[in-house]
Each structure stands twice: as structure tokens, then as C-alpha cells.
Length: 89
View (spheres, rainbow, N blue to C red):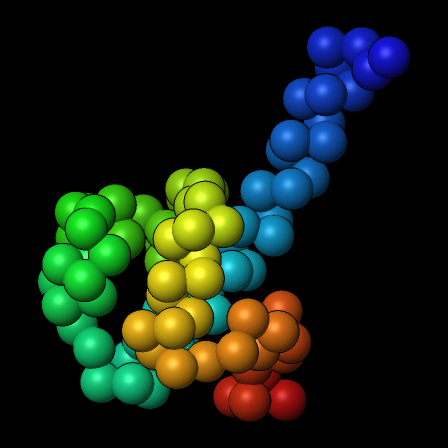
């Protein structure tokens, strides 16, 4: 069983994945021509929550349901959100 500190460290380390995912969401949203407001409306979330998801300075978490809906709406396969962005080469 993990100690409280070990659980905290794992959660903290996973935050990087959410930040990277948010950066990818912002990239593909812009590439698809969506505003934050438009995508948020489709997802049924607030624009400010989507902004927190996309912000590299915050680590807002999203559910798999939201993630797969984003993939479908933006017409981007899920695996693309875990690969390096084309502009980062």
C-alpha cells in the first residue's frame, strides 16, 4: 500500500500529462477552427473550464468521456494527443 506522500507524488507527476494533453487540445482546436466558446458549448462545459484545461500553467483534469468527445468533435484520433506536436520538431 502506498503512503500518503507516495500517492501525492504520483498525482503530482501525472499533472504533467494533463498539462501536455491540454496543450494538444488547444493546438487541435485552433487547427480545426474552433473557438474555446464553441468547443465548450459542444462539450457542455464552461469556456473558463476549457481554458483551464488548455492552460500550461494549470492542471485541470478531464474525464475519458470528455477526452473522447473532444477527439470526435475535432476529428483527431486519440493517439495524436500523445504524440509530439508537428510544430515542436
